[in-house]
Image (cartoon, rainbow, N blue to C red):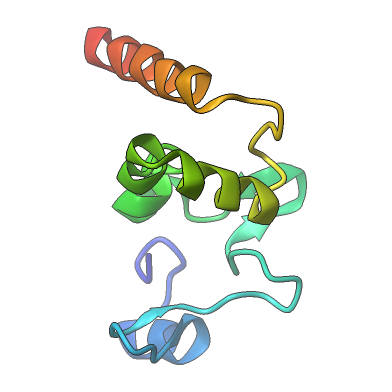
Length: 102
């Protein structure tokens, strides 16, 4: 990400990283969203975004546990609140099949 943004690793870490109990993580913007989320829900670092971001919203925990999906619905406006867990899993499988065929 530092290279994409034409920054040194040190400057990138100072600007965009923070400590957490689980180790370093990207900072969160004042609005509660990812610091790299731009207008129109575009990712500023899309070509090199972390694996967990590429998975979103189809994280393993949300696919396995219906309760986790319900919690994520309250935190993420991009997840349809009317979507059932079964439909969510089916959509993840559909997208995985599409990606595999590309």
